[in-house]
Image (cartoon, rainbow, N blue to C red; front, side, top):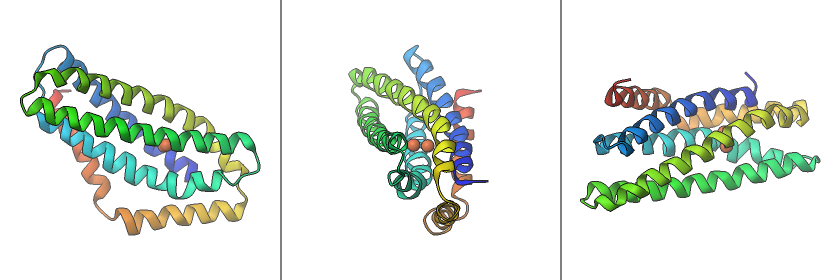
Length: 183
Ligand SMILES: [Fe+2]
Ligand SMILES: [Fe+2]
């Protein structure tokens, strides 16, 4: 798999996480009690898998290389994607705060959990759609030498920063979320 294909494949798992998160949020909004662990686990998935594992590859390797391309559109896309990552992180921080408030006994925080979750889901879905369209084009603008350096960088991140068994941990989080939601 090429680096762009790897990132696009990872988007599929992220999309699954978003679907489960949305299913939980809809139940929560409809008045069904959702336990705190559901939210904490998904926050862990979004921070760990989306922000570190996946975006580590994007932010440390793929996007910096795209920002150096001569095509201005590709540079602008890479800039936009980096900004959106920051917005996503802010939503997760705000979500975590409202989750802690709500389960700490403040029912008024429910509205903020729902708002932050929905904004995050919407942001990530459109971000992923756009990356899926742009990444193959960006990749084709890299020289063969750049492409192999990017592929090596991805391998290095997998081995040195992520490590064995970590992917399984995130798959397990999603499986647990399905059990909680009975889907
Ligand atoms: Fe991204
Ligand atoms: Fe991505």
